[in-house]
Length: 112
Image (cartoon, rainbow, N blue to C red; front, top):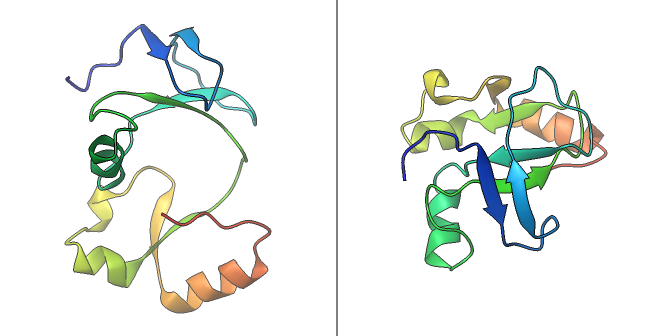
């Protein structure tokens, strides 16, 4: 399956109601809106190998928060051969000191 975004996708998972969903571009997102995402590696391979979602298939998820920070461990990026050009918009390389500080101060932390 290519990287082209389809006009419609069928959701068969329980993460959102099962059914056919129409995709359309938006200028901004609000909390609780549905988004179609293509899981990045290594998550895509994990989902495929464990029978959750074939590689290349979009998954539907709800926006759970706005204006959060996306920080990546610089040491982990280096170990995987990733540079700043590989980062998604809004994400940035961080240090262990900064990660420890924002983790201690945060209401919620997502790690994957």
